[in-house]
Image (cartoon, rainbow, N blue to C red; front, side, top):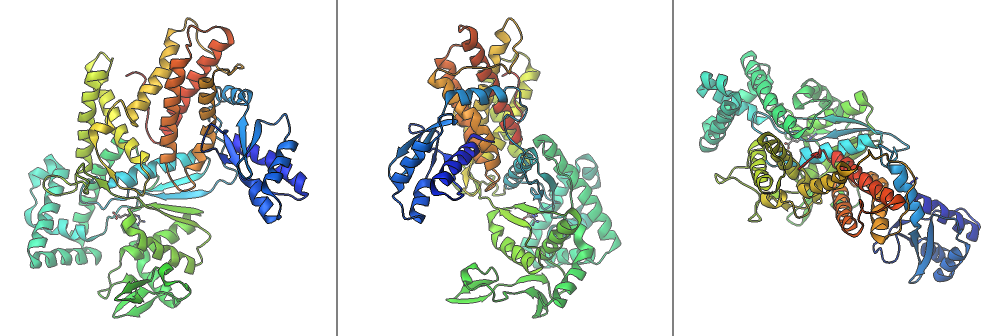
Length: 582
Ligand code: ARG
């Protein structure tokens, strides 16, 4: 049990005793440490329900509070109860963490099968900066959910069947340079895509020609299918290079094309069940009128002061299927084949209406037992505050962005690193560059936009990945100076405030990690790790380790050790490995 859970059960016991009926009593971490470590408004809430004086009830709680509990109590304001955890309890927690690989984090009591749908770029064109958010957020959430004991299935639902293939096929037939394709397949593929995309913007007839190539592909034309297969292989190879560099992997790559055969029968089924109907030659899903508040009905939109239909189209009048059709088929597949309890889609916030519609369709299909979440995120901005673009006005390619991050970190490494060989320095620069991009992504609230400022991200000072690396290395460095190897796990004793505060934060790890999944917000974990690092440096300055003796020295070494392991584990859950030296 976490400390918070222990307090909840003690408080519930005391309140049940006083009120003579079983009660629950939520406890939360304190906002302000000056008044305590945890707090509860349970007495106030319960007193109100029982028409009692809240302060009087809180006073009864304090009077009945057992002396051997893990915390002391105090009343604040109209009836808040503040708890201060006893130093010996923090000492025991730190001691336990010192020999626990999980650092006190329990596995969940109700493991679920969670499908994480993330990254999912549209292929045949390179990944761009916009793909960072989904890729990094999804990867971190999958690591955390797995660590907590859930069965996680990661699925890269790539867009491998869309309009872009019409363009690439058209260009393949018209301007392909075979030699260039052999020498640098990805560059040639990109050239084809760009050429077709520019040409179809400028020339209506080319756009039509591209569209016809797509129709031919969808109708099973052998030549187009062969071109598609080649392009897909090449693109997947290109994507894999980036995923390897980011250390991101997937259990499945079931792209849109994997569901092609399921689409026609799905539409028939929806028509049969009266969940969809024909409209102007197309097949659409409409509002069923069951939502009384039109602002909450994703199938209605307000136009010219009136609520009008905003249907989800699942078959176009030309017989083709849509993104939405594929998503319904995918959702069903994951339910039936994988027995998913949850599907979490890490996708740009601009698709929120699509997901609201999709989840409503799931309810109508009777699949509402699943926890369906759209884990939305905002936009990455340039230092000018506008969406990040290259000088040519395109979205920067992800591979280039990663290269830039590594060159920026090379400067930090050249100025600050103590590593001797060029090889080690180059490896450190790569690690810092990639980690800085990841950490910056995860450190922002996912729904807010953020400015992509490479120099800030790779700086050693600030709320950055390299600052945490430095803190980790510093907390480990002391062990190299010991005459005998350190064995963790014996009893410790906390006396100095800086020691207690560090131990307090280290104990919180067990509460912080699970809370990330409540609203899928890894930034809770990044803030926590930064707080641990700051507390560690204050502690390290206030409390000499090697000069201390006896149990004080042992306690301080244990704190260094648990700090290092907490930083390392926390970063690992974010998909960031630590360097051994810097
Ligand atoms: N390929 C889509 C895009 O780039 C994202 C797919 C997300 N996943 C899903 N099941 N819709 O916008």
